Amino acid sequence: MNWLNIDKTHVWHPYNALPSKTKILPVKRTDKTTIFLETGEELIDGMSSWWSAIHGYNNPKLNEALKKQVDIMPHIMFGGLAHEQASLLCEKLVKLTGLNSVFLCDSGSVSVEVALKTAILYQKAKNLNKYKFLASKNAYHGDTLGAMSVCDPENSMHSIYGSYLSEHIFTKSPALGFNTDCSKEIEELEKILEKHHQEIAGFILEPIVQGAGGMRIYNPSYLIKARELCSKYDILLILDEIATGFGHTGKMFAFEHANIKPDIITVGKGLTGGYMTMAAMITSKDVSDIISNSEIGVLMHGPTFMANPLACSVANASIDLLLNSSWQDKVKRIEEIFTEELEKIKGYPLVKDIRNIGAIGVIELKDDCYVQEVQDFCVKNGVWLRPFGKLVYSIVAYTIEEKDLVKIIRTMCEAIKSIKKS
Ligand SMILES: *Cc1c(COP(=O)(O)O)cnc(C)c1O
Image (cartoon, rainbow, N blue to C red; front, side):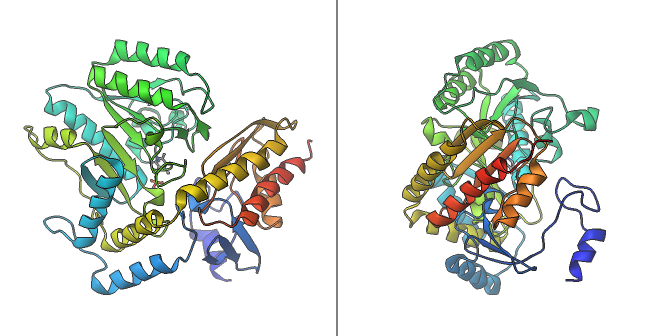
């Protein structure tokens, strides 16, 4: 395992120092929902590679799609050229979202950048100089510059980057709980929009679940009101479905819980079933028409690897696989198991809150100093989790076996119970 020494000396890991300040485990291979380490240990995957591996790893259908495409055309520039896999994928995304115009990009953060740029262009096309965004506290939209500027100002450490980040307007995040009344937060939203609507191009929001900014589940009524207010002030409603999309909350897209139509959505993570990096920004016909008929006339963005055929082909296969499976029943069963098992740790002294929806289960602790301890316990007991801050959470592939899911949740709980308070 000489390569692990190279990793230690030369390879930067996410949110880390070099050399790493936290333990890094060497992975040999993956299969279904198991991670095989070089050391011979096997871990049940409780993270689905950050919401992406919705079918588990090494799925024969996805492998086949990728292998087939590599012989046909691994890549081709998208400027001035079109290809079948991209068209088929965009058609699927249009059908699934009810929107119209798809811009394919290389990662979630980039799709957020493109969404923000699109909203500015849309307002400019209407002869409005609106350059600010409204965003939510506890939001997470990615790590690139524009995306970071609409993340929670504290979690994403705006203070570190100072004036490098542009300033936007933040509103209270909706109250915790799918059934919790959030009229107070709606009231604040109304006040902010009333005061600032002339400078706000768009309201960017993660629908139903705020992910990396706090794993917060909230009431669909907030989205309904946000839609209403955005329409009233001609502010684009941008829903970031990068984490929630493709079934994670029990609906194909989380905005379906509120039965609304956003102006723009971003998707990524689960889009290729966790195989390749790819994301998309999707807008209504109105948005693309207004930009295209304006003086500027074009959306000025074009990644080199836009619409990469390998990524498109595996995304097509992943969506087909999802639609041909009984994913709703599976996610529902996962939700039931999370509900049942998490209930057992409710009220435990170190636990502040438990919450879950769809394939997502969260334990919020009262303190943020147990991350490594919890992770070590889980790994020792055959489960891969990567807690952050006060949050010990799991997002699982829809194909996970019930006994494995139960083991993940029970290990999470045992890890917390094993903490020795110093
Ligand atoms: C992960 C994530 C992003 C960023 O996607 P990357 O592919 O990591 O750039 C943006 N928004 C949300 C809600 C996410 O969960």
